[in-house]
Length: 283
Image (cartoon, rainbow, N blue to C red; front, side):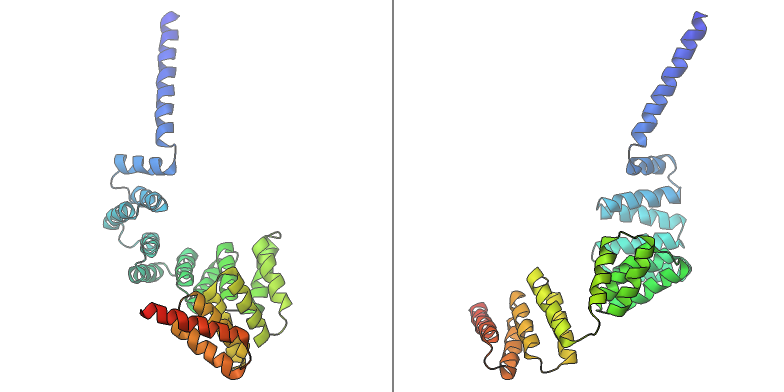
């Protein structure tokens, strides 16, 4: 029986070694997909997935290299075009990113994820109307697309469309009852029964206090759309422009604020500060 025992021991050791080697390879998704590319260099899924792993750790050159190798094998893959678009978006090449997003949609117009990732790109570039349309396309194809619904909620917030913000927040809460963001946005939207210049003025002030000066300016401009001669909104504009060191805009807004409210000490201070900094910047 000893030889049989010895053989079994050898087999167990071999099995243990093989398991150890697989564990080394499969320790992370990156090592797994790298192993696939080595053993199956013409496997397009392996090449693309390894490229994705490289992209996730910000190795964009490496990711692009593997994506390009995948294109040689699968040139009409919508997923690959989407990944290329995400890569170029991450490297601030918006023109190339949009080109690949559009091609992905052309190749697979029924795929909701293509619309979602394109919408995320549009949102990050401040193109909220287009982002909204693409998110609606994603949700139309997958009605319970929670990622798209959550991003759409943020789009409505950015657009200050409080009625739609309330609706989408309620939809999200139906699926995720304890979602903090949706609950916050729903409470905010419900608290604003009527859109008034004062609402936007308060938003402008709140954003200013948070240090989000671009949003503060945006809210003040929305107030001025509703009340063109709203001196307090011009004062908020001036203060925010000062923080962004946009002295010309700050001076113009402060001067307009003083035309409307000559006794405004805040506007006077903003104007004096902007003029002083403008002179210093020219020296």
